[in-house]
Every structure is written in C-alpha cells, then in structure tokens.
Length: 247
Image 1 (cartoon, rainbow, N blue to C red):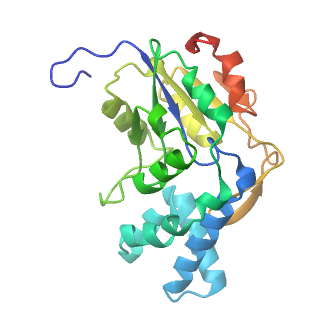
Image 2: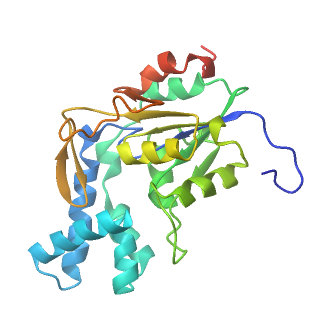
C-alpha cells in the first residue's frame, strides 16, 4: 500500500483511541457529551422520552447518533459538532498529564509510528490532544469526517481499512491498537490487527447512546478474548508490549 510509488515504512503503527482512553472516564466528559446530544434531539421538537429513545436507537444502529440524524433528518453535521463537541468545557475537565507525555516520549520511534484513531471530528480530537499536551507526539490522526455524507466509524471494518490506507500500511498484523470500547478492539482483531489492548476502568461510569453504563457489568470487558489484553492504566503498555519502548 505504498503511496506515490514510495516504499512502505517498515515500522509498526500503534493506534490510540482518544476519548475515555487518553484520559479517564472519571472526567465525566462522556456525560457532558450525552447531555448535549440529548439537548440537540430536543431542539428538533422531540419530547424528552422520544429524544432519549431515538438517541439510543441511532447509536446502536449507526455507531454514532449523528449518523442517524444525518440519514433520517438531514441535519448539518458541522452545526451538530459546534453545538455538541464544540461546547464541551474540556479545559475545565482535563489537564496535561506529564506521565502520559512521558509514556509517548518513551515509545521507540524506530519501531513504531504513533497515530490517533477516533470516532470524533478532527476539531474535538485536536482540542483534546492539545490540552493533554501530546499533539506533537501524534504523527497522524484518523477521524470521522463529518464533511462526507457517508462517513464510516468504528467498529466498521471500512473505518479501519481507511485508517491503514491513510497511514500507508498494508499488513494488518503490524497494527497495534488501544481503545476503551470492547467492540472496537474485537473488530480490529477480527480484521487481523496484530495486537489489541482494551483500556478498561472497571467501576467507573460512562455514557453510551445517552444511557449511563457502569464498567464492570454485563461482561463488557474483553478478558479471555484471544489476542486482546485488558489494561487498567496506559502505563501497563510498558509491560504488555515492552518491545516498542526505548526506556
């Protein structure tokens, strides 16, 4: 999958999800996001209960509520982004983490390239990376392109294939992936991605499709899934994948 006749970079690519992975779910950012999406549904003239039901339905059916809104209601996705992700008080909820930056600095760049892989739009992704003070540690960013009518998202196989194409890597076994979503890491593994880590903070609460979910219930970890490790802290990557660190 070389680009413009160039030979392919022989290094592996490690892909990091952003939200609820590079920062803890304890920040409650997913709750703030869920509240804003719900408010958007209500602003369309829906009653509270109807808005909640449709939010969850679109999340389950399309992976993102936004995709359902675009398909059934012809809304402007960039306006949606401005009103939802764009109004999140991220500066009040997350801070630069010196330990996180050190983790990225210690990755052996002779062995791995570092990319971010997110279901958010680029504006939100870059905003989070800048606040965390690790934007300069990320070589490339693959995001949900809201400007494209039929954009894909995790856990769809085409999203991962497109990510590989953007990074210029043809061998899926050379992809390493860290994500807080069980389904996202399972889908990547099924596509042949070589190493996957499920970032899992048992006991914390997140929001999915506008509904609160406590991690650790209903078998939502990937423990026992072949080829997937479960980590509770990103620092554990140093021990599960020691070969990609220089220190």
